[in-house]
Length: 448
Ligand code: NDP
Image 1: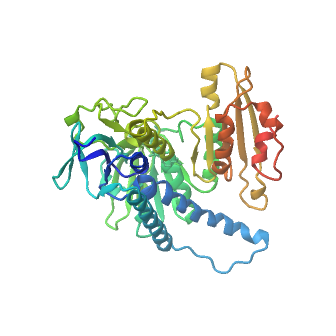
Image 2: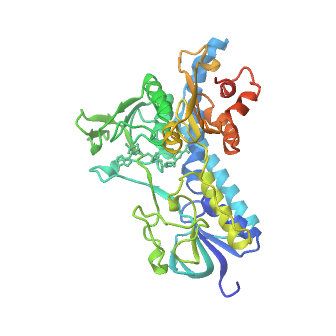
Image 3: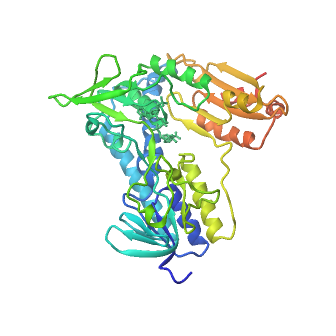
């Protein structure tokens, strides 16, 4: 592999790119990676990690509220957005250093500038330098979609939300998917007045209806307004700097911040993929085969840019499989069934496997077991929110096809039960497991 400057050049140092770089280097490859923004990518820098810290911060609103029932006397309680924002930013800095150290420790060279493909074995850096590599990996991720509306320049996306100069009094969030509902919960708990505006009346498409039907009234009871079937037409800025959102037929909605969360598009614009005849899909995604190879045999792609499943652990697995396949003589693919997922809404929901509707499509008839319970954690709370768990079971084999949960700590519990579903365990085997009492998770083995 000595005719090239590197064995592997990775474009994008996010979750998929860093994992692929590290593993390829461990297999003996000479690796370089280019990153135009910050090492760590969306998840670490402006996604999952800082978002989860905001979720934790917002939980205190409810816990402090309930504390007096448990005998605590609290003094004056106040919240300081700037302190939280700066703490989150400092943790992101720490993680970026850790990711950079991972590259350094594995002797992966990194270039802090934009890179584009300039041929099947060539990349061109923003500085103009051309570098050759036997293989190129595209791991540039995705970018928030900004609908074409008048006044879009007054709106922010999840890229900017972590840097707000102050906690907004009124937030309008466009979309009703992962990002919209997670941030609706965060801002609501921190004290903002929140309105979720969506073009349809569906929330969290893809999740089991019983979960979303449970989540919506809880979020409304917590004070979040939902304006459904109201696509945003225009966002207007008033003389005092406040915003007015014109959406569908209803009255205009006032806001201090308008956040758009309407999906994320693969970030392939201007990436020079045509110079290597890398085919693109209609949404800008890079189609790849099961080994992550594009239509150009020396160029591979992993993660959100391929628009298969836009989740960090999936990108990491794809990056790892790519490196093992190409540099480790261990051809590996990624399994896309039984991927657990969660929405860190308040309360959170989590799921693995088939929804009831999907299972009926595949298997015709299915058995459904449910538990609708009041979590002990909420007993003293003014929050009367009930948890809901659902098992979808194949009546022929008794295998558990899907688990769907809404309630406190659902994502933490779901990760463990996903092992059982992935292993193909039956409902009878769930039932043979002794309950761990008292817990919410015990509901999983007590459904009859
Ligand atoms: P989602 O795909 O989850 O939701 C998009 C929302 O925007 C939907 O409510 C959709 O409405 C609406 N929408 C889509 N296109 C338009 C449009 N052109 N105009 C108006 N509204 C529109 O996207 P997110 O941005 O919330 O998240 C992007 C991805 O990031 C997720 O798919 C997920 O993979 C990942 N993510 C994962 C998280 C996690 O694992 N916890 C957290 C955050 C993000 P409708 O449904 O009516 O079509």
